[in-house]
Image (cartoon, rainbow, N blue to C red; front, side, top):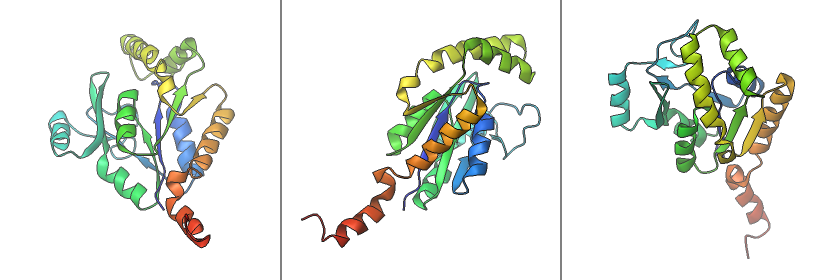
Length: 205
């Protein structure tokens, strides 16, 4: 049976990391796709855990070899999703979750039939700014640019199948869990089993 693909996008500071870590811990069959990036690690980030950190020449080489399912530039840095990881795992029946921006989400949706898209939205602009400042990872100018980008990103919410407003953490957990559980009920992910049932009724005649 083909595996599900979930695409999650959110402005930086929306609480996306916490929510995705919860999902991966909750569902044994759900694999997180680690992106490649040219940006430097922040805080306690480790190569191969949050991201694969590579330089621009190496990134461009992967682009030239078509090793990315999608790639995009965000805030002056390049990000890309491994084509091999995604395609091999959904073909083998695993569910895969991607953490990518709105540019990359559309690229993947255009290529992977049945992909489920989820937009995580902060409860307000003020709250997003507060969360970014509390992280203490960036200077005020960088935070200002992130907030400007966030204003543009949230206007793309209608491009997504689901929107989760991350106001109350427990409610957000519950909504995301429900989306993952219901995703496996979509016909595209059950074609083999559905065909077996139809055949047991004597086919389509």
